[in-house]
Image 1 (cartoon, one colour):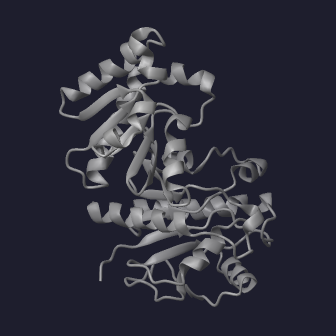
Image 2 (cartoon, helix red, strand yellow):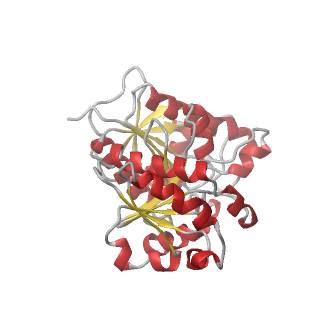
Image 3 (tube, one colour):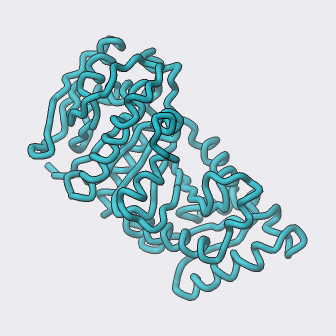
Length: 328
């Protein structure tokens, strides 16, 4: 049996993350999967959901080498700071959430885990507790000392990476610089090779403006920034097509011949991906020295403890992490 192990962080304790972990335990995983969270939290949520899950305590010093059987879940216990009510946010547990992420991330860096899979956190309650927090991606970037990270969402048959992420639309054009486009493209190309096992990745690149600028009549970013960067990288052997108008690029004719799409901004690429793979998409952080995948949805506080949650996105996040680790 392979010694690959994976860390699973349930995220916001009042959200659906604990529910997803418990539901996941109904089927055996191909590798040892260790939930890093409060064992008491999982036990209480299991009772609330009417689930009989065998919660098996583990430590970093004695991690399992074989997967847990169906109906069981390995748990690396991290104590809560305050009791949890499903659906009720409590800033007192913000440090608990960050502690689980830190333990998982450091465990990956130290070789205990082959990758980490994250359920959703609630950024607002962490900030309310007094810790500046803009998201998993930025937190793990700092934890790992990564110079640049890239957000990529994937579903079966489509991967979309982003040059810019959570920016107001009015700020996007100024953020599309030679340096940023080149750095993000290089990271995407390298991680497709190293983490997905694609020897010669084929990448389609979106233009920024409608009709990819229409020869300068609808903007100059394609002429001044994007095309010169792509041409320079092509001379190094990167297989890059574009810049193409997004409404042309996201058609079967183009997508069937590519391994990933590079979009210039968040809402240029992700609506298409989420339409294609809603409920079965995964968020992958590229540029880290570790493997990290995540669900593509939020904490769904209103569904926590209800038994009405769908594990589809978490299943894809797990499958993707496994495949990335195998490709390495």
